[in-house]
Amino acid sequence: MAEYDLTKVIGNYLDKHLVLSLLEFLETNQVFPTEEILQGKLALLSTTNMVDFAKEIYQKLHQTKDVPEEMIQKRKAVLDTLKSLRSNTEPLLNILKNEDLVQKLISENNLKLSYLKEKHGVTEDHVEALLKLAKFQYECGNYSDSIRYLSFFRELSSDPEKKMSALWGKLAVDILVDSENNEQGVKDLEQLKDHIDKSTAPPLVQLQQGVWLLHWSLFVYFPTASGRNDFVDWLFSDGRYMNTLQTSCPHLLRYLTAAVVTSKKRKTYLKNLVEIIEQESAIKDPITEFIDALYIKFDFETAQERLKECEKVLHNDYFLKNCKDEFIENARLFIFETYCKIHSCMDINMLAKRLDMNVTDAERWIVNLIRNAKLDAKIDSAAGTVLISTNQPPLYQQLIDKTKSLSLKVMYIEREHARSKTRVPTDKKD
Image: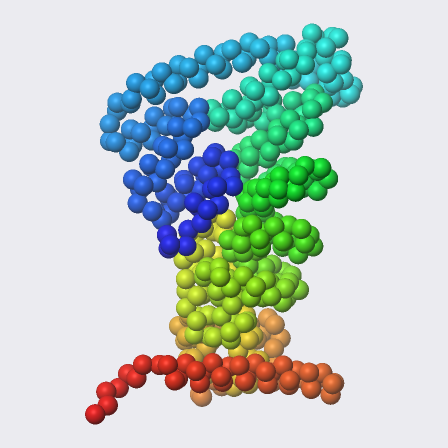
């Protein structure tokens, strides 16, 4: 499903090291030809200091043990620069190498530039050099050293903008070091949100920062179910970021939709999601189109087709790979619930087709659903049907429900009538 891959679009708002993670995933899943992925990785690595990694990719791509002379010279230049940067930060590095001293400074609340200047000869220039060293180590792929230097720089620096720049770097490293359960990344995101919200920068700069934050947050929130719940809560409670998503990066509706569908609060947010998708009808994505087909157009056949596509998209999406089964299960539940609002007696063969399941699995799935959800329904195996009945609510509620049901049925009948008029006959006529 390369046609629905968003790596190129999302990559515009990510650090190049984060993009490398996406390319690694695409290579493993064989979404694109291997040669094409290797070329992309090599082009990306050429803008970093990860010379040895670039060398490996070059040799793999060209099936050779030789490498261009420029790679050899670049490696030498990187080592020379690294040596120089370490020399410029020597007083600070000597402190950082002494773990007992570091812990003592922290416990005595002496990890301050004024104290280190008096007792250890550390200057503002050393602190500035530490940030440069942290960035250089990051570009070399030495993430463990980079994150330590960035953390200490933030403790010692008094420059708010540079401290915030270091926090973006720290978030990137936290994502790269622990991509599956990133508690520290959540804390970094919260600090960045707070900074953007309180920023006095021009509106366009704030908007750009918000767009980047939304994209980077996918790495933090989407590996876990609780993270996806937090993503949904954040966007639906903060109109500023929701507006940013809709106006500047509507392609992220794929992830908002997937998060809502797999969320425990899906019934709370589903109506709002449907309204947003209806506004953004120009977005062509199987995941959003599934919701559009089911809840806006009440087109079950299209919903079924989109659900099949969704399974492939989820499998090949770096951020959604962990929620594929949950999404498919809940999507089937959505189809079943919507169909129940229109029909009180349903043919199991037809339902199996709508749910993209074989008849046996569909019947078993419906039985489990009836049992677990305590639905007032029964299966007539002889007739091959499911009969749905409900307890009688108060009269006013019956009137409301019947009105809603009638509206659904009218839309369904109109759509089926329109479809029958445009359907190509399958039989030949004389």
